Image 1 (cartoon, rainbow, N blue to C red):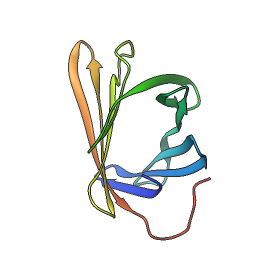
Image 2 (tube, one colour):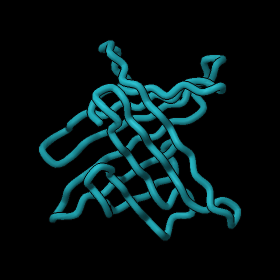
Image 3 (cartoon, one colour):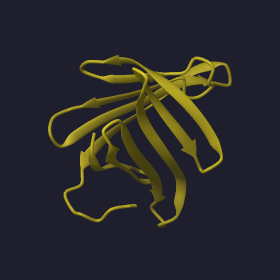
Amino acid sequence: MLGKWESQSADGVLIEEWIKSDDSTYIGHTTNISNEGDTTFSEIANIKERAGTITFEVAINEIDTAAFIMTQNDSSSVFENEENDYPKMIVYQKKGKDSLYAKIAGDVDGANSKEEFTYSKIKKKNNIF
């Protein structure tokens, strides 16, 4: 998961970058850039291991924050928070050296909803932060 990743869509590009801060903390930054070049979404996330529990903490557009507990870490890393409306679940799965799959799922207006992303590794050293 470390490194810089991009997921192209008809609406623009989603860029996600992960760095290792220390032995028990990873920091991620995600930005969505529209085809017009505008930043339409931004979030900062931390994956932390504290007292034997691994959490995924995220701040969306620097306003809304949520914490998710890791419930699975084998072929996929799954983080869940049943009290959060959307998402309730965040999944990451490495699909080879240069491909990363991510999914967020939860309730939107009382119905189950999910978004899936396929990322390709960005080879250049142009860091977001």
